Image (cartoon, rainbow, N blue to C red; front, side):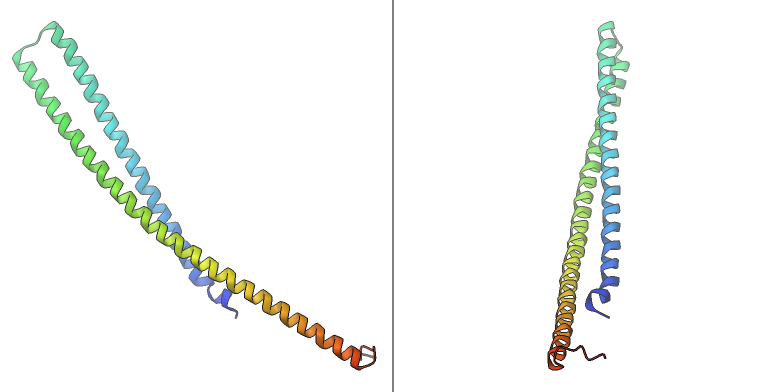
Amino acid sequence: MNKSRRLKPVVDHAQRNEQEAARRLGEGNRYLQQQIKRLGDLQHYRLEYYQGFQERGRQGMSVTQMREFQRFMAQLDTAIEKQNEVIANARQRVEALRQVWFQKRNKKKMLDTVVDKYRLEEVRADERLEQRQNDEVAQRYHRNGGQDGKS
């Protein structure tokens, strides 16, 4: 069995590893996008709530309503801060997953390069063998005085 065929299981394994790393990276990116959307939703809700408060404030409100608004705004601000932390962690995770995928992809590319080199060597060896066989046939033909020696 030639070298390129012997490496096929290794290449196949590297391919599966690269695909799995790519799948995980995709999942990480989707999670990050979901968390970014969630942050946007929180920020949008906070803005709407604040605008509603301003409208009600123009009409007058009690001290209790004012405190309730401030308490709820503080809760929203805390939720937004926590969501920013979730996003920062998700970004770090995506970057780590990207590095893993990059390493797996490079290993696969390196193996492909080695296999291609072996295949080229095998083709050249086959061509040399064929040329040598043709040369032997030609030498026999000339030694036999132009007859192919089959008659």
